[in-house]
Amino acid sequence: MPARSASTQPAKQGSPAGSRNGKPAQSGRGAGRGQPPSGEREQGARGGVAATGPGRYRRLPTGAHGLDPEEVRRDQRERLQTALIELIAQRGYPAVRILDLTKLARVSRPTFYSLYADKEELFLAAYDEIAKRTASTIMAAYQTQGSPGERLRRAMRAFAELAAAEPEAVSLMVLGAFGAGPKALERRNLTLQALEQSIAANRTAVARGAGAKRARRTDASDLTVKVILGGIREVTAARLRRGQAAALPALADELAGWAESYPAKAPAGLGAPAEKARSAAAAADGADGADGEGHRAGLPPSERARLAEGRLPSGRHDLPRQFIVKNQRERIVDATAAIVAEKGLAGLTIPEIARRANVSHQTFYEMYPTKEDAFLGAQKVGLHQAFTIAVQAYEAQGEDWPMGVAAGLRALLDYLASEPAHAHLTVVDTFAASPLAIEIRDTGVHAFAAYLQPGYHHAPPERSIPGIAPEAIAGGIWQVLYNHIEHEGVEDIAALAPQLIYVALTPFIGGKEAGRVARKRFVYEGSA
Image 1: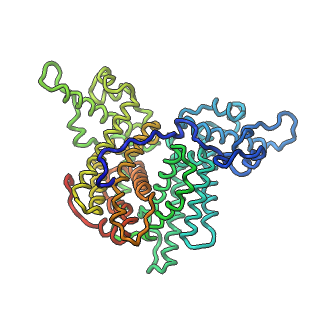
Image 2 (image 1 turned 60 degrees about the vertical axis):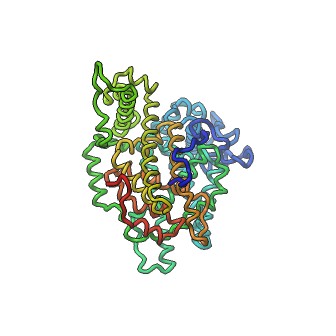
Image 3 (image 1 turned 120 degrees about the horizontal axis):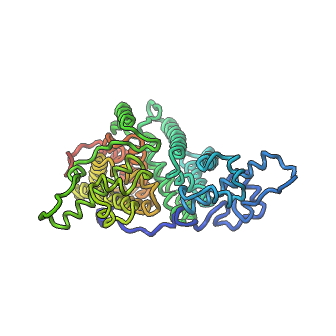
């Protein structure tokens, strides 16, 4: 959460040279290390889909060349996957056309359709290739001799060096699934689950090796691993979006040090949501009519949203113009959030927004030029409300920084539960919206991270806390919220508070004291 001395308004961040705004400054296997030799096309064919250099889309000989047909198809598939990676980095997945792919990869349309059924199948093939290569790179570095800390640092360096050398490919893995459809998101979730299980197993082995009493099986409800992976992903994605992939290797040791600051086993009694409650939430989602992308029909409006519903009196009345405009704008952003949460971005239309908000089309256009502007308006409202409520709870604790963080997180979760549609739009749907929406989100995450900065002053002298910790913690918590809202809804999200408080405080004050604060019950201003 942000420094007590920090401004309560999110600071404007520099516009990222994101993967959708233009090609990153470095790209491909040789980025930052000079151009690869002309023979790297053949080396890349054996090692992956991100080879660079003038020959990366070179056709194989035509006519009677005697080449193995499978070798020809393999080369064509690799060229198409490389072209997809490059085009997604430049434009984003939705804007990439089959025509663009075949032209850049120098294959014919009939050849494309002989290899892939559609663009989505090509994306999944490229994603699987990159995920597989990334996992093998990380595990090869981790499965070496040395202490767990040394092995973790080697693994982090290997991943960071891969991201620096192939920013477009790694961007596809950490960012490209958003907006690419339900199958891509499902593949991303499976990849994350495999990583979580691997890391959790290693943490359990470390606890057992360190002499933990009656070491038990990994607790599936422990969110620590999810936060660690989420934090690493957020730090990586931020540099990739800004064209700063070359900076990642220098952050590898800091990220590893931050991950190491968490005990191998979280303390008991943090009150993770029960599986029964999760099953009930999932059943409710199904009953409400979840679609293939996880959007849910019939999200209940908050009390604030219900008060804003309905038309204002028509004809002559004494209501001030300022009140009328505020009420209409509030109804528009609430309608936008509800539609996106239920139907996804594809279902957002101006007629539907106007109908639900009970405003005319003319009134809509007076406030928002496009539906995308209405989305950004709803996003800003959701972030501002969440930030304001969390900061108020934080500051109410005075100089007790750990309790301020705890109060702020509890208030944030209560707000998300009270505004389910805005929670879905602000936390989940932003990733698939636009580069500007992601920039606004990043500004909000940065503002929350600033409130963790005072932790350096509250830490015992003997604790060494990496400088990347606040950014990684805020990003990791955001990823946990994303996964929970997307897959389980907001009904029981307040039950995450103890664990999120624990992961926010542990790097600064240690696991034991963080657990004590996380388990403490208190009432903050504005809570029920």
